[in-house]
Image (cartoon, rainbow, N blue to C red):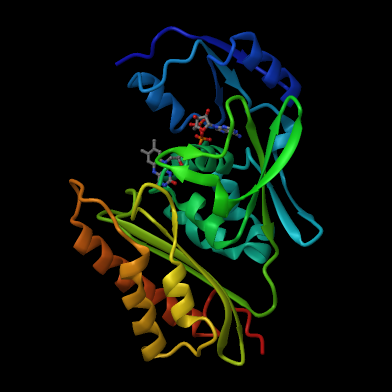
Length: 294
Ligand SMILES: Cc1cc2nc3c(=O)[nH]c(=O)nc-3n(C[C@H](O)[C@H](O)[C@H](O)COP(=O)(O)OP(=O)(O)OC[C@H]3O[C@@H](n4cnc5c(N)ncnc54)[C@H](O)[C@@H]3O)c2cc1C
């Protein structure tokens, strides 16, 4: 199929982007890496009057330390995340998840901002943003606001972004000395969207879990935090017992729908298996994502 006819403009600043959006009274659509939008146009899932290409806005690029936060520009591509030393140091959970995002050709074009704005429940970065307690910086013609990942994902492909707003940056609290993280996913073939995926970020001192955030992808309409599983391990040493308690608690956290790929019961089973593996890695201070610590 071919897209419906549309006009195209490439803008060089946020102000130009907002002006272009206003010029078509909201019938515009922002284009970043195009890896999800272009197929959606071709399938006529979306038919904007004007495509506003924001990929040339320099202010949306770059990775930098901003106080205790790592600031990742919305236009940072998946492949840059995979290679970035700053991300490996300050937000290693993203480095662990990046190889699982699609294939190299898509990672060379797709952007983290596009992935989060789209909010595909099967995408890796939206769920990892939840696990990392990230904040999103959103801009419109009137100014900037920040929304925490916990309140950003509202429903299937539905977010806190208002019409015409642009996600400008992702802000992640910098990885601390006692923090550990782990990511894994299960898919039929490498590069496919995951049947189930999860990321864990935890603060561990003297082998005890002080803080923990667990986020799943591909188990519902949005990325999902497993708060009951978190509560089951918080304050405890990672052991066979605490892992089993967290796995059991997933029944309260997850309620996946039936779909063509797999049954809800199978998805919960896979989520339990994945959580067991991830907590095992969190319990190992010398694992690839641990920093030792107290
Ligand atoms: C074959 C295939 C396999 C894939 N597999 C995976 C996978 O395994 N895991 C995964 O996570 N993703 C996967 N993707 C999706 C890919 O990661 C996309 O790159 C990503 O979802 C969207 O990023 P983009 O920069 O290409 O955004 P675009 O396609 O340009 O835009 C996507 C949407 O976000 C909006 N948007 C983009 N940027 C902004 C912004 N800064 N502010 C506001 N709105 C914005 C656009 O208007 C559009 O609605 C796959 C894609 C393909 C084609």
